[in-house]
Amino acid sequence: MKRNALTITAAVLTAAALLAVAGCQGGHKQTHAETGAPIAVRTVAVAPATVADQVEVTGSLHGAREAVLSAKVMGTVTAIRKTAGEAVRRGEVVIVLDDREVAGNIAQAEGALAQAKAAAALAGSNLQRFEQLKEKGAASQLELDQARYAHETAQGAVRQAEGAVSTASSYRNYAQVPAPFDGQIVDRMIEVGDMAAPGRPLMRVEDVTTLRLHVSMAETRASLAQAGAAVQVSVPSLPGRTWTGTVAEVVPAVDPATRTQLVKIDLPQDGELRSGLFARARFTTGERQSISIPRSALVRRGGLTGVYIADGNRAAFRLVELADSQAGDAIEVLSGLLAGDRVIVVPPATLVEGSTLEVQS
Image (cartoon, rainbow, N blue to C red; front, side):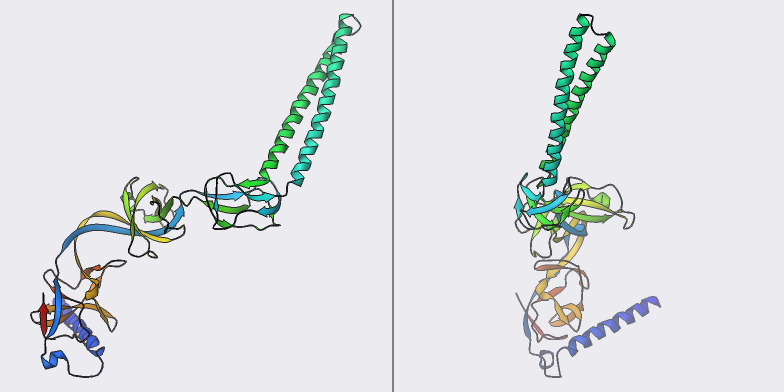
């Protein structure tokens, strides 16, 4: 009973498809099928071929190195020397902060150092005096020990003040924010006059000379991605092209929300590739049999996709299911055709079910 029901259902669907195709032909008029005049067509024989069985995942392109710049000191932004889209060199200053407060801190530290040195000089003179008095018996051992202690304390204060000057001077360099590597400014999050603070993002820099595709793979398929393996990559906005990438890293941690793992794929240098582009990566899992036909053979009428085949010297319409996301002249057919079927290439607009054919070589 089930088989009979399926047969009836298939017959109904085929009849509906034929009615839809016929309805798209417009009002009734004499056709080649009615007059018997043959239509010249070219055909291609359907033959299965062995192709790679692949799993496709999607993601976005990123720079191989990324850095978010921030200031180490608080200060007002006085100059922004680079903006989004501009190239930078390693060490090149991109943001300048007001360093007057830093200059004041340096002056205070230098003043404290001068005082410490003066106190150390005085303590040194007192120590020499008490050493001479002790030799003459005019000073006690306790007085000499106290003078020596005061001298060593003063010397320690000098070293501490020197460290404070060095620290304060280093903050002067922090008022200038440099690029950490050669790359490109891809985002700017601050304007002149804004207050920069430690930890606040100011700019984002990427090394765009080497791009990396980030994709998320289901934890059950992440084993397909092995470091160093070759991966075919395509970018929908750049149709007709593919790149061979290399798996650079497979993050072992699984995202608990999506149950996926992050896979990073290095891509070859290409001026057309840019950070942020959407891309697809295909991982090969084995081989399978596939049927492909020329894209020009497809007929889309009434919301249906199919092809005409040459059934003897008559045309027959077949509904087909196509593989997704394919580029090029050939497209894979998942169902609707069998090996040996002769598909009509570039079917004429006048071709309908049952048309008489003149098959040309």
